[in-house]
Every structure is written in structure tokens, then in C-alpha cells.
Length: 399
Image 1 (cartoon, rainbow, N blue to C red):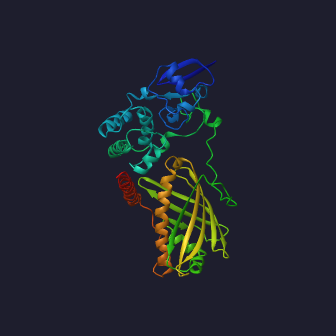
Image 2 (tube, rainbow, N blue to C red):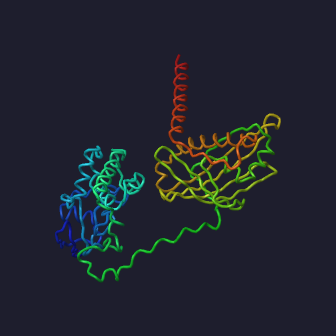
Image 3 (cartoon, helix red, strand yellow):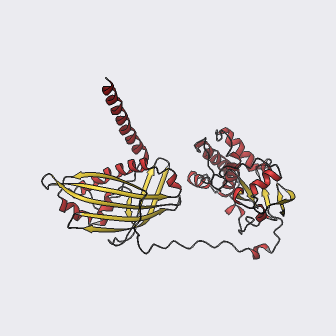
């Protein structure tokens, strides 16, 4: 048992606690401040967010003993806070809460955004609140509430506070506690910025977690299609959302692909290698990329084979697509959704490829970014058609 001395909601506290006790359990069980909610207890959902020396922190993964001498503010300590009062009113006005379980942590994080952001940028607000999960509202009302408070404060001439007052980092937060003393800035060095990501030396093989097959046909002979596939820049121009970021080389292609599905948008930047077998009219593309915004990584493999049809005048392109997705997007990247997205992507690619082989596509045309609205409507029509087909087939069988 250790004696923990800190300041909670402007009140000095000195209480014994086990070294393993989290700050969330400490304020709830020792101080009866149950406005700090526990959800995942893994630092993911944000329900337990409190202020440690004025900086939002996940109290469920912060040890109480690590906050010795720090200034802790829970949601109860913000009752008379002007920014929080404005946010509470805005949350009510914009219907930004339902069950309310996430709301204390959401208000703490939103308060930090109101202080820091120079303007009511929806994208910046959504990124800032991405660590606070809500199972009820869909976030629209929450974002509107935060936007309205920022707009109102900036209109009144209340300027943004750069970095929210953060000066140094440490186990007790930003180091702005009254207990820190003048020497703390020298004792705790600022966190050094992460070094820039270096490109991988090689693109390794991998075992995909999901594999599916697709095919499409073009009215051109296999030899012409295979020669087209050797032009990496032309192939990238045919793929919606794709672009090259460096001169292509078969052993190492550097590029990016943009995907947008409704409110979900990602840009995967990475590298790929291209393998070709002219004797069998087949090839393989292996790549790896990451989306910095969502901290998601994907590995992909496309194997293709060209089959002559129409007495050699046309080509059927048979594809085997394997992928592995990790990170935040893996939570929404269900195999069925990825397969539907790939179907649309391949259909767009096939049309662009056919036009380019026919000489109709302009050189250097900008890639088309996928639109989630049209994709969703197309998928809905296709699925309704399948459901109706099953219904009538079952009805005829029953008759």
C-alpha cells in the first residue's frame, strides 16, 4: 500500500492505494467521484477521461501513484467551469446525448478542443473526439454542439489557446500542477517528435486473412491486355482513387489509393512489387500501405490470369484478391463490405481499362475517387434484387 498525495478538484487529497490502482478506480472508490465512468478499461472508449494537470488523460490506464503531486480534475470539478457550462447547454440544444454514459468523458475532451482549436473545423473536431466512443448518438449532434461553442467563443473574441497550454510531458501530465515547482521543466524533458517513417526495404510475402475471386472481360486480345499491364502508370490511371508518388519500377512501386465510403475516408500510402509471367499470361502484385489518419495498415495481394475468349479477340481477366487489414478501419472493414467495395472498384477499373485500350481515355486522366453514396445505393439495389430473387424462388418452390 502506497500513500498517494495529489489535488483532486482543487482539494488536497492524501489517501493510501495499491500501486496497481488505476486513477479511475482511485477517484471512484476512494473519493466517491463516480461521474468518471468505466467502459472498456483498456484506454479505448474514452468514458473515463479526466484532466491531469489540465490535459485530458485516460484514467483507466493511468496509475494513481504515477500522478503523485498532480492536479486532477474530474467532471464534478467542472461544474462551475465556463467552457463546460457552454458545452452542456450546447449538448442539450443539439441533442448530443442519449444514454449519457459517454458524456462525462466526451465533455472533458470537447472542452480541450474548444480551448485549442482556432476555428470550428468539423474534420479537426471529429479527429479530436475519435478517442471517445458513443454507442447512441451517431456523433452528429456532438460535433454540432462543439462547433457551436467554438464559433460563439471566437465570435466573442476569445482566442484559441495554442496546444491547450501544454509545455512539457510526463507521467503527471503537462507539468502545470501547482506542486511541480520551478525545476520540473528541467527535470522532465519534452517528448521528442517521432522520426519520419522510412520506406520498407522490401515488400514481404504474407498470408492474407481473407481471399475472394473476381473476374471481368474486355473486348481486346490477351497480348494487348498483358502489354497494357506492363505500363504501371497507365494501370494506376485506370484504378479509381490510385496515384503514383514516385517513378514506377516493377520491383518497387510507390503510390497511394484513396477510398471514401460515406463519412469514412482513408488514403493508404505504401509500396508494391509487380511480378509477371509472359509464358502463362499471369502476374502478381503484392503491396503494403498505411493510413496515418486512422492508424490502419493493410497488406494486399492480387493474382491475375488472362484467358482468351471469343477465339482470341477478347480477354477474361481472372483475379484472386487477398488482404489483411489492421487498425481502426479493421473494425468496419467486414469481409462482405470489402468484397462489395472491390466489386465496384474492379468494375470501374475494367471500364477505364477498356476505354484506354480503345484509345478513348485521355493520357494522365485524374483517378476517380470512390463515392460512398453511389456505392451504397448500388449495393442496396443489388441486394434487394438478390432478396427478391430468393423470395420468388422460394415461393415458386413452395407452390
